[in-house]
Image (cartoon, rainbow, N blue to C red; front, side, top):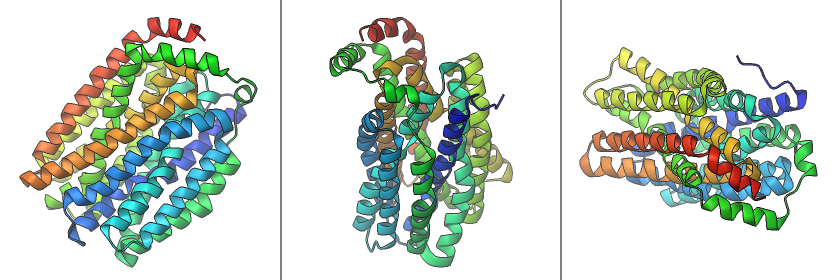
Length: 410
């Protein structure tokens, strides 16, 4: 069930992407620990602290499509190398920050640009260019499992670093990890597939293809999926530790719960990848949506008191949501619109990921500050999760027939 692609080169690409995502998203998902520190130790409001992450995701949304276009043209090594350098530089600037505005610049702009270049959409395009549709769900699942495993290591690590050295020292340590581990991994381990190096679409063909694409309902449904897929999930990513802590859960225990959810998500990515290849992308995405809605329900219940059972169940349901939303969205995009350029189409999906992830945490923080409760924000998360499910079903149903005419126009 978990076999890597038969080609040794393709298998290596999947493994390198998985290891890089382990680092990238381990660092990214550790923001929930930093967020709790900003709110409880620095005294910043939830909305103000959430703007750091939201600005990061806005920059991510802008750079991901540009990174996708650059990948189609230049290949992964120079593009991802630049992204890793920006990540390291942004985290180093975070370690030198002395104000909220400094963090917005460092984490929001510089680190956000690095994340957009090396994020899920661009990484998915590299994997999809090496792996055909029959194994694409499993390949993406194996690589994206690195995101869940990363949270297991980096969320508790960030908490320990903050305890020992404060949050500035923690950011400096993470910057060194990006520079010394991530940068060599991406620049040495990845390369352009032979077919992509030999086949280039002519500009006139590309333009005609994109004009047809913009007239397709399935394309706009997919963009709505991107907008609402990670927004709800990242809202929980940012606020979950602070929410649990407000319910009386020790921060170290909350971080451990998030880490456990990461381990379960790693298993879920691979399992749901198999479900996706065997039973369809929509089936896998629907299971994840149900898990995410269940996680929201448990967080609502925690506001009146948390128990070990609630925390364990939350880790399981959150993991199901994490394991399906990005992987299945990019798999569907690659299946339907691969002739438009895998980098370009997945870059657009990644950009929508970033836009939704920018708005969701900020809105939840704003609602919390105005109401004094997370109830309204969690209900918003549930509504967005339902919208993403409906849009995914529409994209999956309407894609096959229109795709033929659009791609044949090339």
